[in-house]
Amino acid sequence: MNKWLKLMALLTALLMLAGCNLIATDPVLDVQQVVAKVGDTEITKGEWLEQTENVLYNNQLMYYYYYGMSYDVTDSQAIADARSTAIDNMITYEVLTQKAAAEGLDVLSEEEQAQVEESVQSDWDSYLDSYTTLYFSDSELEGEELESAVVARMEEDGITQDALREMYTDEIVDDHLYQFAIQDVEVTDDEVQMEYDGLVLDQQGTLDTTPTLYQSYVSDGTDIYYVPDGYRGIKQILIALDDEQASEISELQSTLTANETALEDLRTQLDELQNPEEGEETTATPGEIEASTAQIESQIAQLEEENATAQTQLDELQTQAYAQIEATASEALEKAQAGEDFDELIATYGEDDGMTQEPYASQGYPVCEGLTAYVTEFQDAAMALEKVGDISGLVKTSYGYHILQYAQDIPSGPVAYETVEEDLRAQMLSEKQSAAYTAKVDEWVAEADVERNERLLQAD
Image 1 (cartoon, helix red, strand yellow):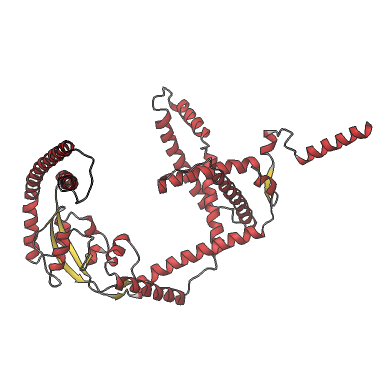
Image 2 (tube, rainbow, N blue to C red; image 1 turned 180 degrees about the vertical axis):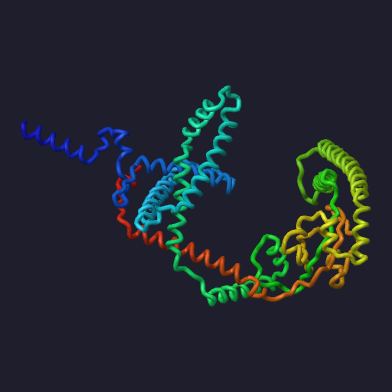
């Protein structure tokens, strides 16, 4: 019996040491378990799980605001991925913190400390105003009592001056560390020239094949290294329709378009009822066919009546709207055709913001044969101008009246190296520095004294 009791006691002790699931876990002690260590710094399970929740929340926001999609924070794979991301981030953060301290990069200058305090005070005042408006707009509290209540509410959300101070200090230390990591990174003249040559060849292959893409590149801000043949720069003076009238015109045009689509569909249905295909079987009785025909004809008549009314309203509104701007447009046209400075006329009469922005302000809108980016009337009038300096008549579009100038033939071929070299070098340097910093961080993490408790990290 004594041997049996001793054996049971031994098994019990072993089970306790092994953390057997048969024994309940103390939740307070559980979150204090160490899941990883970086040097002497411990990362507890509680800290890790809290960071996991932050990762899941941030992912949820990102999916909603950037992609318009839902993100299931309860999905097992999403949780596993968030846990992995969280512990990696926490380890990396601690490695960088210790690296910054070892290199003396966590010390702020007096100027940087002043910058931190200024940012903290600015944010603090902003938060005080926001929280007062959000949560205490109906409060009877005043003065110090009100401010104390607001501060207490902010602290519930983790907003304190110390937290703000730590955040801004970390930002500066992070920048110190970044500059330390990239201090030897540079881009040579040969590298810039090689990159330029490659970009020219790449765009040349694309734009010589599809020249109309050049207009899209200019419009969306793509860096330009090559210009295809056949482009002209068109400047314009736009005398715009009144905003309210333009909106009403657009709504009427949309109604007419929608009705025409519906009419086309109804006429197709009517034709199929009245002229069935040879051999086509139908279960409808003659009476049902007659009733359907009458219903469709009634719908067609109603839509045609609505369209006639809408078209009359549109014609009257357009006549009125264009009449209101015609005198101004004619005055501007007369001055343009008399040879007055076109750019000055744009500044005086023009209502197109695009004409005040580069590159359009200097070269005009890029136009070539076959473009569909502009309204048809603008495109046709722009291509009808025969030589540089020519001025169009009044071009009527849904925007108002346009007066176009053939400003220049846009030079084709590679863009001059000197005009893009500075920006290209800065872009290449930034990319090279970013890659170098990432590599350095990976190196520092690999070299660091990191211990991971995989049993805890992999547990459900």
